[in-house]
Length: 454
Ligand code: NAP
Image 1 (cartoon, rainbow, N blue to C red):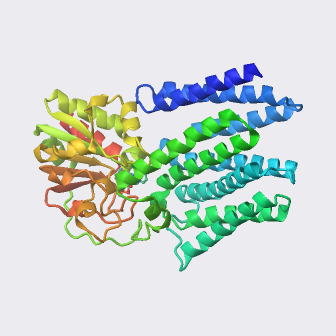
Image 2: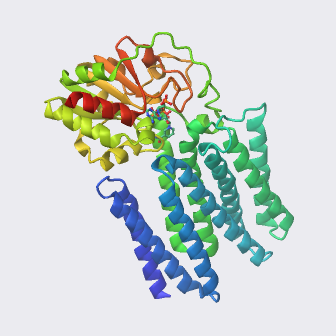
Image 3: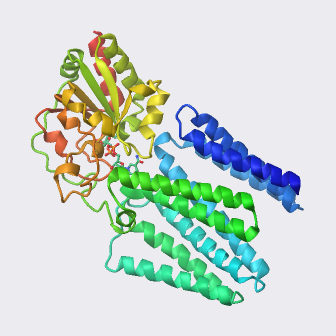
């Protein structure tokens, strides 16, 4: 139908524009709207094209899905976006795998070799992404322990399970009539997704989610070929490639490889609550901090995950304005993996109306720390840990960090000596120029503001 094809072209253009716009802070809301509109058009065009008999069932599905999505969007806090993304992928990939399974059982044994090959790949990717994403969700939501489940021969077991599943898929290409083989393939894919992600620590979950995102996209591409739906191929390709690029960028920012993340068992080290080995920690008072800040010429704020937890961005912006009124030069150092998702700090600071030009990327700001009077670390930990540069045995060795330690004075605001996401001690806290300000980030900054104003 020409109308359907026309709507599909508009949807595809909206998806591409959506990704383009979401890459810019100012245009990101527009990007989000464009993506949603593209999806709405795609659903309408598909309903028209396939000639549905039971509109009531479609309506129930749309209302149920819509209400669930709305609850997730309204109830889940910003800090839970990674697990929210994981659960969305789980549902999306399950839908793709189930449609693929239905296609198989509807058409078996009359399935040509090409379609069966694509169908097998699509179903394997869909089911493994489903269980993998569920485990990622459970780990991030702390429903199960975040530690990687390490046991001898785990990589071998995972690879064998995947290999048998792939062999089943190949077998079906030549003999699609054996439905038991199809079921074994599907079950082994579910098991592989579970085995793969359960062996990865929650520190790596955001990257794993981006990798699973690309798997889900590839699965949708496969389904597009099976159903002969061009829009699904376009949308799946955009989804798959953007997830892959995001995973690559995250790996680069952490100086890790895909294989290290998928098979490294990262995160088995000391975890929150285990005993740390700090000896020389200097605690300072809010009054001291306020005095030093007032008398400085340049201040760099280093936001991290704790700022998101405490929602301290508004207070930080207020403190920055107060200091600027006193002719202090203020900037914000942005680490590419600070927080729990790429761009996390940018979004929070934009919410608090911090001018975008004050946000300085890691490579640029690192050369400026030497000439900075005060660096204030607000709920950041791993991204300022010098162990990444000095300690070859550290799990974060090689990850680029913000060189906060080069500033004349460093204040670290956090609630305790608990570690960050990587679960390791931070050498920075024992440096002679570092002062700890213990407390909730929002409260501590509020107290500093009050002190300066008085
Ligand atoms: P982090 O290393 O996880 O440390 C966060 C710190 O915030 C903790 O030490 C915690 O200490 C403190 N904190 C928590 N709540 C607080 C509150 N209410 N007030 C004050 N402090 C609070 O965070 P990060 O430095 O931002 O590093 C991000 C980590 O996530 C890195 O390891 C990175 O590799 C990983 N990661 C990020 C991404 C991404 O895309 N952004 C993706 C994958 C992995 P207390 O409990 O003592 O307060």
